[in-house]
Image (cartoon, rainbow, N blue to C red):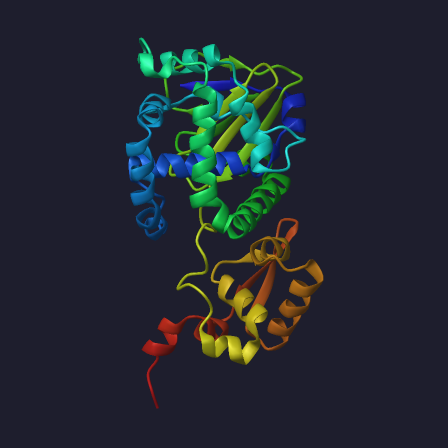
Amino acid sequence: MGVWRVGADVLARSRFTVSPLAETVAALLALHRGRPVSGREPWLRAHIPAYRDRLAANPVEALFVQAALRPNWLADFVTMPPLESDRTFHDELSRVRETPAEVAVGDLAAGLGGPVPAELRVPDLPGRAAGLLEWIWTHTVRPEWGRLSRVFEADVVARTQRLSSGGWAAALSGMRPGMRWLGDGRLRINAYDNPPRDIAADARLLFIPATTNGGWVGWDPPRRYAVVYPCTGLLADPPGGAPPEALRRLLGPVRAGILTRLAEPKSTTQLVALTGHGLGSVGGHLRVLLDAELVRRRRSGRSVLYYRTPLGDHLADPRLNRDAPSG
């Protein structure tokens, strides 16, 4: 199995973060394989025709995708972990573009297990790869990045809270298929039969949520490592979509949106990340919903979680309203 040996110093510096480039790679994978995460099928149908047209018009890009996205393997130079100084997608993309051509070709050869097609052994291969990634970002990710980034931030909050209350075993539990914390500084990242990898004591380990079914690992040894994992549970918009119009008129759009998102218990911080509204605003709306007995709260470890009452369920879920007996 693939095990990373991670010391206490590395764990102390580890953190959860959000990466626009990781989400762009996740989008490329979904388009290439035709398998989006559950709930993202409309997104795939909307973008896959233009993606296929792009590759048909760019044979080198089509060859690159086939070589870089292998079963159970991704080219290292497109999955490098972000730097602390990165602020934008283009900050991350610049390192893909600046990869030496011989390094990029070597990555592809490792994945192919043999010679790289002559069409890919060109000096501007990293630039062409970066051009495709920039197109994926511009056309398929950036239009919804505001919403996605809030969802990812909420996932980070949830994982961080789990880490605070239950340690690394709890935070990493169920993060991605085959991954688990084994204890004694051992992190199993997958079930493959690979030799253990020792992570340098001064390295930084990142955990990055994305819209992916399985996730992947990336590295720029010896000091940067990342685990990209499926953002689950919070990925889609509230069940049933936007709040019902009648509920928006009754409670106001922000309060209705909060109530709709509480089909599963969430903390104030998660709701701030999901809605994009400030902590004071979300807290004030929660107090109103508590007073109206539409939500309740309970403590879980160090967090206070809010959840809907049966009355809140009835108001927030149109299916319940439709199916309720009359009279």
